[in-house]
Amino acid sequence: MDATLPTALPTLPDFAALPTAPAPFTQLRRTLATDVLKLRRTAALRLTLFSGALPVLLTFCIFFFKGHLIMKAGGDPWPRFISMAWQTAGTLLLPLFVVLLTSLVVAIETKATAWKHLYAQPVGRGAVFGSKLLLVLALNAAALLLFVGLLLSAGTLLGLLEPGQGFQTHVIPFETVGWMLLRTYLATLGLLAVQYVVSLFWRSFVVPVGVGMGAVVATFALLQWEHVSKIPYAAPFLTAMSLRVSKAGVLEAAHEVAQHEWYALAWFGGVLVAGYVLLYRRNVTN
Image (cartoon, rainbow, N blue to C red; front, top):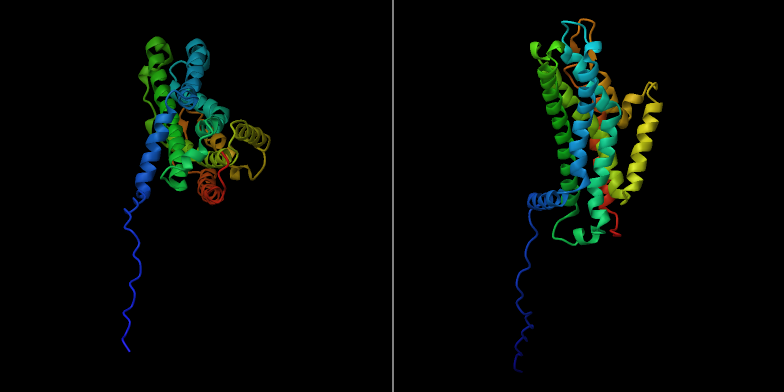
């Protein structure tokens, strides 16, 4: 009996290999570049400039018109000038700025109902999450750097316009200003993370702003509470109020990270991890 040869299996046609997904860092870089382009001519950019300039402008006007009543003759005006501007910014303006900033950056996609289109692109959700977070962090840092730059420039200008106040004859306390800049930025991170996740979860401009403003008001009502340092919305206020002028007229601030700022960092890490896991499992609805 003749042996039958095995029949050859049909072969599938050769298809061109599908392109591989870009590396995670490449996805993040491309998404970040796109988000930066979307940011141009938006309210978020104008808000960053405005928030850095407003407290300096207010303090400059006070010292220009009433500086001779505030300062004693021969005293160093820099400590009082810096502390007044910093406390004006940190007590109320800075928390509200972070609330509005995060909502405006995320609302760029929400306003255009572009979330489905965004997630259909060859980038992962991690790249989208990280890109917008880096953008908010960068704008927050830019606002604080602008505030410090304008603050020192305004004091120098006062020395030229009002030489009797003594700005030009005293040294700027750069070390204390540098520490306060670092500590203030760290103090905003917990609040920023909470507002960022809230803005991504409720894709509406009104809801995150309402949540943030309500939390800021509630925090002010709880300032006498012994555990207020654990509330992320209180951290910028506590850092600003830690800047003091001693009886000798010296600007004083701790040259170390305070406890409430460590709590803010803990909020930042914990909320971002939990928020990313929650949002990663969420279906895209718009």
